[in-house]
Length: 248
Image 1: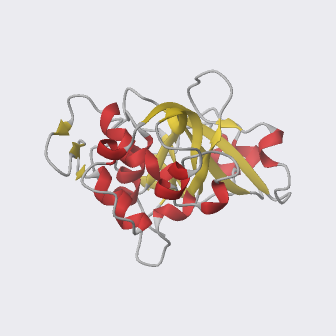
Image 2: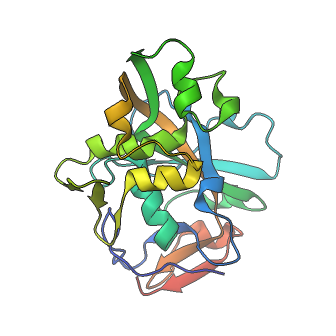
């Protein structure tokens, strides 16, 4: 089992005793984080919310009976873009706090998945300068997504530069600074897609893009981490998930 790597995350440090976190670790025996991205992002229709909630039934139509999908919204005040969260997770693992009062008994006997929502995760083209169809040919990396939209989740990386005011080092390639690391959005895009898009996608991208809410990743939960101790009276012990006590 891979445990949390100590770091300062975008949402702060895990210091409150008795707090609980859903977690999926990182390690050499795993698969790349890109495996868990939803491409294209699943549009989210609804209001902003806090805390972990069970997904509505329509989101899991066709799923096996022994699986359950939870939803959590990644806050813009901590992570201005979905890539900033993914880049953190690929270095330190996925860690999301879940209320101690959550109905953990509902997870018993289930394979638990967590869908991550960001308010600006799904890029939608509202106007473009290319002839119809040419933009998809030039930029889309997931050909099976063309029936649904013009852009895929990996375009969140170069587009995220504009969502991080004050945190971007204006160099080529541009670098986004996070509390515990830095990353270069265009370099990531090139690595993933194996395409050469030039020094900055926005230089050759004559389109107006609107970022809309969407589920950008669905991850399998491996265990629950309790900070300091398991909170008294919590039903987390009935979840069936392994529980690991951590200092932070």
